[in-house]
Length: 263
Image (cartoon, rainbow, N blue to C red; front, side, top):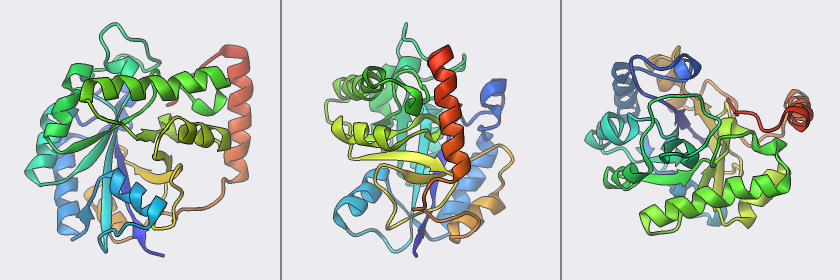
């Protein structure tokens, strides 16, 4: 089965807040990882290209790779976008609108964030923009009305800022379920990215696209292994009993304590 690395980045900075440090890479390491991607000979594409292929069979390059960024940290519309553009690397940015809107509300702990007004700049650098909910909750624990708001509102907000349709979604921390995936379809999303800690493929699920999350301990060698199509399982595959059990526990906890930060 052809293997497609879909990489998930968060912040790219030297001194991140403690809560996001595990999922942060330094600018120096980020540059080295991008150079490894370029050297691999893979063709970078935005998530829309993979989504179109999964939905309609639209042709993909022989060896594609997808770069994605979650949340909308302050580095994204500046040095991170510049590093991508200087290497002619397209990418997809999934934005948590409550965290980047002045006076907005989100479950993300404090961190340097970009602003909603900077969103068009991402497209100027060649990044595709997708939604990452309003508040960054565990979507698979929400009642239907709250789930609809978390999917519908960021789509509308981003479309208003950009002046065009936004059709791609990423689930916070990858948390999803069959009902969440159906809701994403109903709200007009053409795809939704999960995590799964796996390589994607040409037969992956449009509403559960597998991604590989970059942690601070990952090295250029790890990226090179993924570019070779190795080092991780290959999606699609069913949820494990452990994943199902963890979801049931989180739902029970949310019923008592309310919405919980997905992270």
